[in-house]
Image (cartoon, rainbow, N blue to C red; front, top):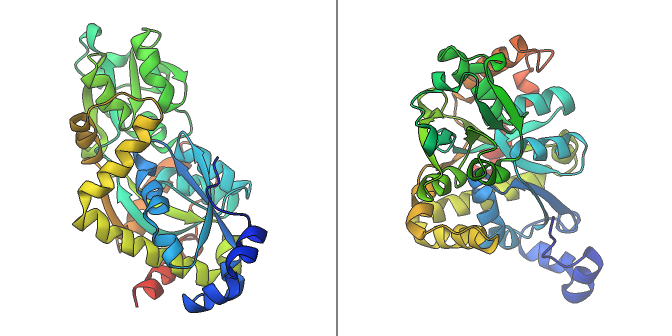
Amino acid sequence: MTNRHMTRRQYLAASGAGALAISLGVEPASAQTIIRQGYQTNIWGMPTYYLMRSGALEKRGLKFQEFAVPSGNLTMQQMVGRQVDLGTYAGQSFIIGHNKGGLVAIALIEYVGKTAQVVTRKDLNLKSVADLKGKKVANQVGSSVGNVFVDTIGPKFGVRKADFQEVRMNVNDMIAAMAAKTVDAMVNVEPYNAIAVADGIGVSILDFSGFDRMPVVMAATPDFVAKHPEIVVAYLKAWQDVAAEFKNNPGKVSEVIYSFFTSKGYTLSKDTFSQAIARVEVSPGFPADLQKYLQGEAEVLLRAKKIDAIPDWKKALRPEFWAKASS
């Protein structure tokens, strides 16, 4: 977790938050609220990372504090515990988060099915998911990508959870485990898949897009939307600003995100990174078919006993905030 902004007291003393808020069209009480923004440090979280680096939030009179974690299911858990206000993760984690903590979706941010892959050790010459029987497979248990692999993709190839040895670890630790040959394969996301392939460690044998497009939602705690509806609308307006940058200035966006990974010590060429980021379909909005998709995923999770009820979608999905931001 990092905090690149002044404290509330410093901000008020330095610039007069009330006057600034009025000039930006945000109520003073809203300007005094700091958004606790969760995000994951794999490629799925990078649109949110860019949002925080773009200046779009500040232009809307919003302040934030960052909470970085390896994967979105951890952000979801932080939100269930009310440690974070907003965060992105795929539909499966969102459904679990709603079941456990009443979390609500305020927008769809991106589709990431192409970024989720099964990568096997190159020296093993494995060709199919079916070849994973009896193998050690690194998986971030509880994550959306982990759930989709275990509940949906594996069974389509005749591979049940009991058929392989699941090695629990964070996605950012999997390349090292592959290189050390302590695991035979990994269920991972970008840019780690692209790095493993480029370094000659692994071979990608399947991506998830043919099975699940994997929409990633921006979720919020019910407490936050109830107390700060005007902040939610301003926040989504900032996302609309950023969406335009992803479309019209992809070079700038790519450079900011590329610098994030190189600053963390990852050695990957810009070409390798470009391949990874191109697999993320950034498309903020609230599509009409989102509920149908989530309903199907909820039925899978219910059968797997990972939730105890299908969500009430009128409570779980809050498209009115996006509609107001777009008006």
